[in-house]
Length: 180
Image 1 (cartoon, helix red, strand yellow):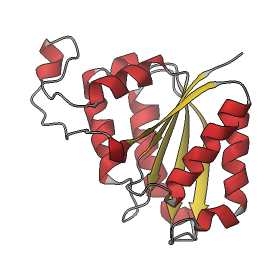
Image 2 (image 1 turned 120 degrees about the horizontal axis):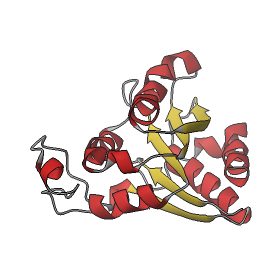
Image 3 (image 1 turned 135 degrees about the vertical axis):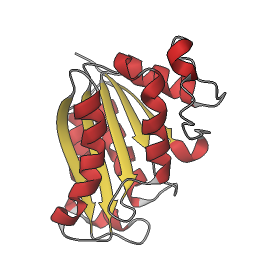
Image 4 (image 1 turned 30 degrees about the vertical axis):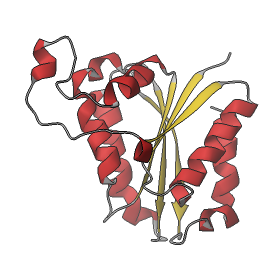
């Protein structure tokens, strides 16, 4: 059965290593017959959550008028969500964190989803990237009802743009998308 797959790339670099893995996952999902779309956060305006609590008294509407309303709608409609971020000081980057924080307006509606995570880092030790994956898990597993974590794609030992294309993880991202 075809699924609705949403890939969210937190990479600040178009063609960066995590963004390339997003493209591979997307290609695999499309080749498998799924409806799939990638949101490149760099091209979107997603302001930070101000903690004003406006959303709580306005049916999940945010006081900010930016692209997050559209993104949240797509997250709610998706069956599968891929969250991708380069590792910045052993955590997710600011673009991805802003997106996660802004989900507060309607996070209870992001339920029953399958999640994949893509992380890329210059570091080669998977143990050192645990805190980044834990950031994703804290949001999805601890906050979203009915979450099913389906896989983690680790693009390790990559610094320069495009390096990930030479590693087995490049094909792994395609295969995970195809099998999601």
